[in-house]
Image 1: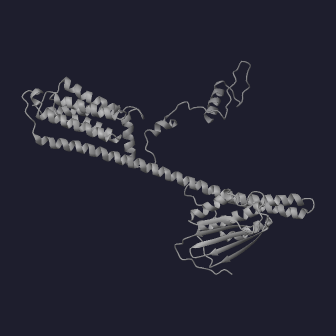
Image 2 (image 1 turned 90 degrees about the vertical axis):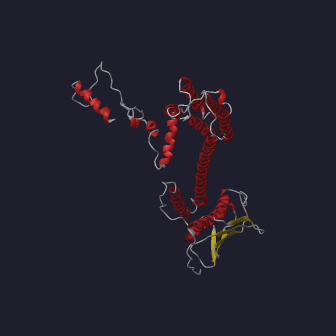
Image 3 (image 1 turned 30 degrees about the vertical axis):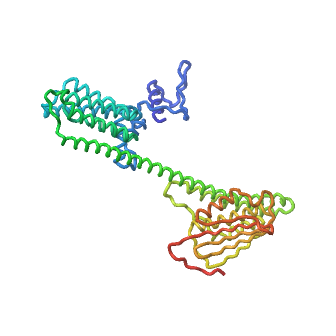
Length: 466
């Protein structure tokens, strides 16, 4: 925008206009208006405006240098950035084989001179390597056959076996170890026939049988190629499995976190909205006959909605950047009196009884206990005709015993249904290794009973309850 303003100012000065907004003449063209919602590309695109070019050359942040080098080598092999033929690495192999064989021929005067046919055979052996990732089995057999023909023609030994090693490596890595073993075995067997029985009819002229001692290094080379290829294949599979396991673990953690947030939001909103719903009904019923009581109901609605907003904000704070700590402590049984007061505002009288030496609970167990009691009282308000409820908290050795009773009867939806509230309570208990039972009593009431185990590193300091 600043560049356009400067250009407009310069054009105005060129026309001799002194004012910032010159009057437009009859034949004068109207200057184009700037539209904020339109995106205009830069006039001189540079490298920083092309993220794809940067992405293909720079190393990813926090990436191991070895992995970055392997990824760069893979891109270099493919030649076109992905999915294409590995023509660069194939060209490199062909150059190395051609040059190395030329040097090796100088020290093997008893073999045939490396003429045009020999070099053509070397190129013919390197060419199938372009397709070693698409069709590894035909490539490994083809390269082995061309190599055997090269040796049968009496040409010098040398880096020609590099092509066989690369083809076998590609076949094994792609899961065709049997084909690679057969190709190497047939090549070795053919070499035995050429060196010890067929040399009379093959060039070079006057050649004798090869010493049997050279077969041992040849067999060792074949075994080493197969072993190295299998090792690379196993490591790749292990890395792929490790990546899959890591992705599955991250997905599992994300699902658990999503379910945890869903439980928190359900518990907070269900309880607060139930209180607001009851008080709104009271306020509407008493708005004309008892304005003071209606005012009290509205005050309760305001307090419940404010607390609900605070708890929802606390839950949503967990979605901030990783590593940030929550801004407020999670609720626990220490806020049980507030819960009783809120239930009383909704017309439910709650009595609380405790037993056993009171213990400082771990945060997870403390939060789960508070939410279970909160959900149980919410269900009483929503689904029970009773206006009284009893909460018993029992502190045991390494476990917490919670019981919430009401005298019923059930109203509206069935009290023992399997809604999200009961499912959330069961999930909270199961996450701690505890159990929960919820169902109707024989006398028509409803009971929620939960046992939550907990463990502490340091022995707690018990305080006897009054």
